[in-house]
Amino acid sequence: MEQFRGLWRDTKIVWMIFVSIIFAFAFFVSWYYLLLLPCLPVSFVYFAFIRYDDEGNERGDFT
Image 1 (tube, helix red, strand yellow):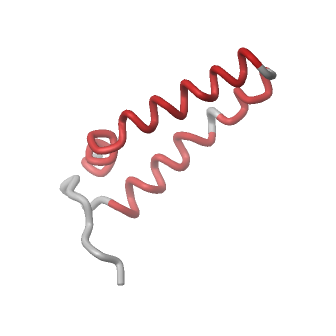
Image 2 (cartoon, rainbow, N blue to C red):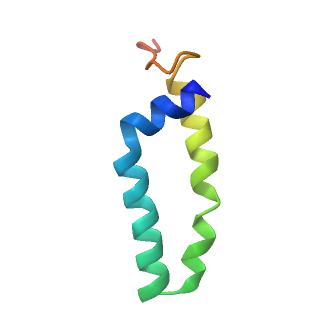
């Protein structure tokens, strides 16, 4: 759970921008863009587990 908090703490503005863009496209272009919304939690969980440790701190270099 701390991975999610760490990622949200560091990137909440980016995720809000993603959601805003999706809603704007759905409103102005086509409602089909709303189908992108289920993709956001999947990528959020993926990046949380890859980039953050169990304590919510960003991991070091991966090389």
